[in-house]
Image 1: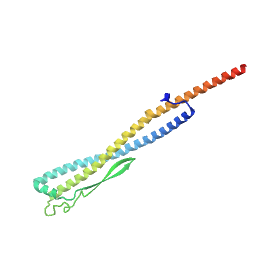
Image 2: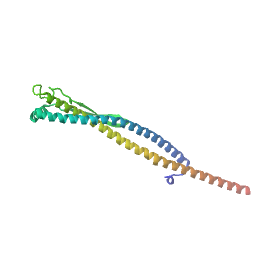
Image 3: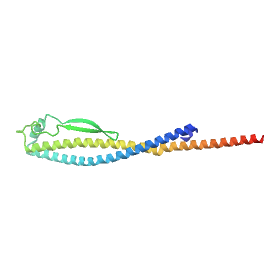
Image 4: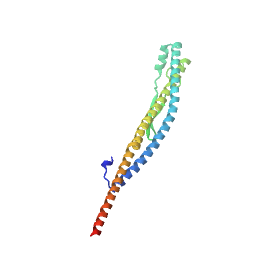
Length: 209
């Protein structure tokens, strides 16, 4: 890069400005990277809990449906499931974590009362009710896990992108700018010395005459 710059005072001033700007950008990006990493680990803790709840919810739901099929019969269980008329409603919003847009999922009509499930009080049984409860809990766990996992992925992508920019500034852009600055200073010093030598020679010739 140093070979492609002009050894002038204005270029030296411009190069110093670029170095200052790059170093400021580097510090800001480094702070952002560190902040994003802290946020990522916070979300990671939530993700561990969410995954645990998801596994537990899935295990409970599969056990309950097996019990319901055994006790009530698969036809009655399917009939109860088909009776549900109101499906869960998902509203996808967004929130901002240090400049990263992540999902904010709101769910409604997931948990229902016996009457809201459609099969009615007379057509229900404790086993079917408990099975419905288990699957409603599982749906809530899935929605929560989807939000957290997507947030983790977006934060991780932004961390990687910011790290690349930090590394580019630290190991390429700033060193090259400083190399160019030093080259210009060296050439200007050489030109100044050459000019002093030339002036001394002129003065010497003038005095000799």
